[in-house]
Image 1 (tube, rainbow, N blue to C red):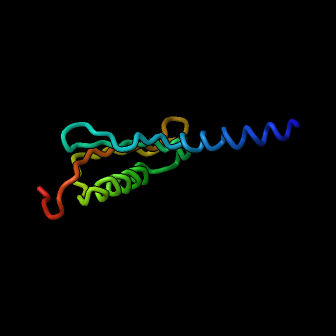
Image 2 (cartoon, rainbow, N blue to C red; image 1 turned 90 degrees about the vertical axis):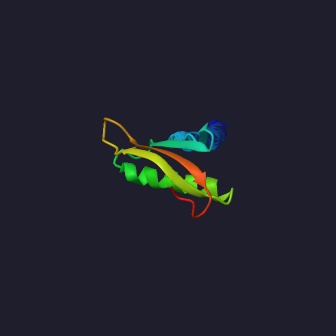
Image 3 (tube, helix red, strand yellow; image 1 turned 180 degrees about the vertical axis):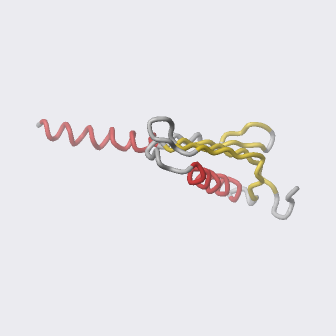
Length: 103
């Protein structure tokens, strides 16, 4: 009986904890054709901020590609993880532009 309860809890609680381990905001509109995505890599304090930033570029590329556009970076910030101090994090501000229309 007790084992069944623990199994049921682990099937519901563990996926929720795993899903929230990386604190990504998802793509958020911040203005007319301006977007931001941010993530904190909660699971790995040794991670480089550039590793998190690369994930954000993949997310931004997927977002813009769905609109047949490409990412145009407005700004980017990243900070490496430091044990007992902070987790690696990054923020990417971008817009989606037509292919070949880089400014």
